[in-house]
Image (cartoon, rainbow, N blue to C red; front, side, top):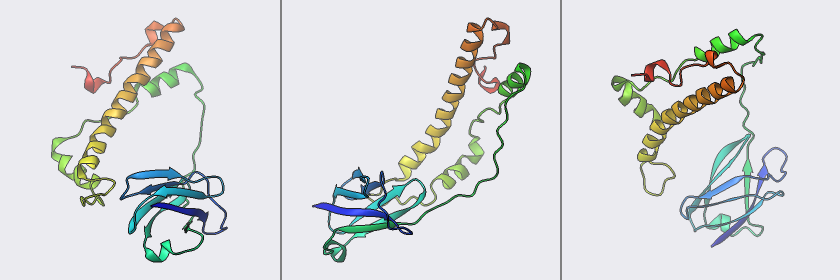
Length: 185
């Protein structure tokens, strides 16, 4: 069946645009329009996962009482703010300071085998291996290892781009090793 509804802010009741709505049973998703309206294919007793930047995520159960509402589903999202520490942005005053900081960046440490079980337990917290969940333990394990590899590749690409720029500027003597020290063997 096609489920129609509106996503609104709980404090102002204004429609929210670009809210992600995902049907857990149908494995489909959609995004709300400017006025907060949406339409998605789903099932009776389905659960909709509703997420948006700046708002708390919400699980909305589609039951018979909700389906009988004349104007469709009404989903209210609560604002979710995160308080951050003060951030100070400073420019580098000279080339040697920038090079020193870049070269001495803390490299990504490889996973220690002794801590692997603890790290995996922490990454699997809150993951239910029940069928038809969005994430299972295999996906959490893949995400855990993939994140470390992705960050390592990003660091290597940044180092290569940095060296290319220095060579273009005619400062080949200032280049840094393409691999971090712990990866050179």
